Image 1 (cartoon, one colour):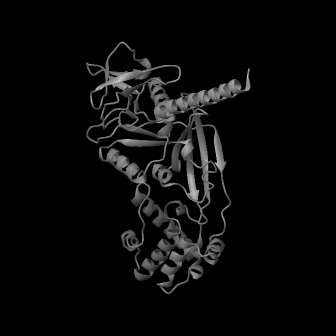
Image 2 (cartoon, helix red, strand yellow; image 1 turned 120 degrees about the vertical axis):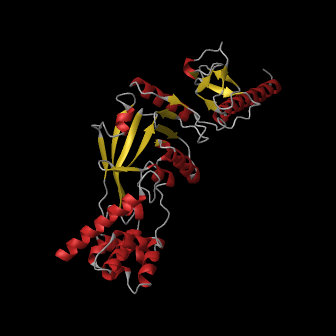
Image 3 (cartoon, one colour; image 1 turned 90 degrees about the vertical axis):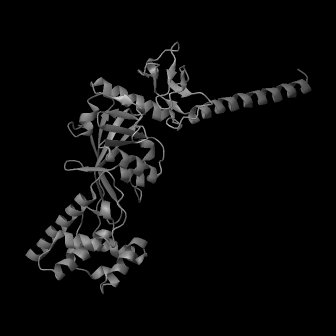
Length: 374
């Protein structure tokens, strides 16, 4: 082949290959952006799952009632999609392939154990649709970052209508070092629940391992070091609702425990480095004629409530002691009233704020009693 022809062929081959790659990227980006749904209705209002639907039928969006297209194929997971001209507000959010996959997994998981379940039902009284609805259980499988304000809005809407909402976070949203980082995200905090057996906990899922995870007994030290335990269940192995409601316990347990430093030493270290949170506590103490490092010894005892209150644990204990000194008979409401001026926003919508303050009050009472007894 002559040199000019060879160069022309090489240029043609390069641009052809580039065009193929661009088309492939455009295809996958379109799939990623496209608003998808796994459920649609026929002309009689009967609901159909995309994986069980047939091309010959005509299907409609359960939200806007406009016709939708059934998409199936080797490269595409079965789903319904609006036509380009659609202005549907109910099914307008684009979903990742991971989200679509996990919704179908949880749907089939619930169905396997004879649970009544709907996929993507539209709740008109809330103007929102959970991923799954099983009686009064609303399931939200979160695979992408979500604004905290939007998370709170959706959660409070469910609670207002007496739904129990289960937020299940994709493992991609959780720091692989878990939680070894200095902070938990607001979304992870918001998804936390509390009960007597599992204490502070949240749920996560990993499509690659095919497992549901329970991170439980979460605690936080004054140094922001997180300790927790993990249980795991493979998909479809037992009833999902029994797992969530603590009727089934996994044999597999993983423990991530970190040695807790002495509180006094940690406070001294952080003050020397002028940590903002500690400087605020020091200012609070200074306004009361006190110094953070010269408080009553019981105030420096470990607490199960650093997870909720952070360094405000120290502030609340100082106020507890002040309340005791002002009143011979300590009353919870007197102490609680003092906290109103210093308590920050509560970031745990699935956990009762007053229940945690009451438990912290009981912890203070126990520590104070030990101090007096000694």
